Length: 141
Image (cartoon, rainbow, N blue to C red; front, top):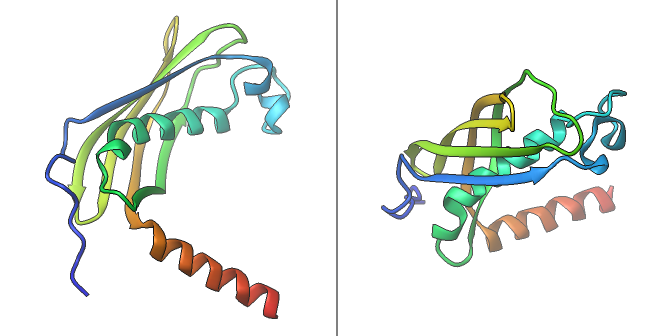
């Protein structure tokens, strides 16, 4: 099978961003990742992935989407409820069907997170078929 290549418009330098205002449902106690009522790391992860999607997903051909496969992240500053957080992602490399991003997030006062993220582009129909096959194996056993 030929190796999949991404469209030429998916290239280093593309940027995406997402913002939230931290609410109770974004805190560590609410999502089960700690006891201190500040922005939870799993929510930071979600926000950064959403920024990566914002950078490239709209450029993918019909029937294709990207899936996260790797994340290397530091979440080094706490953010209280009520503060705005902005996550940004920049494409730093494209190889075959893999897209690598540099990530960062900041609240209204300081940087709170940084890292890298890799996504791979898949054909939705093929991916869905493989998941149905996998699910059938667990039900059959």
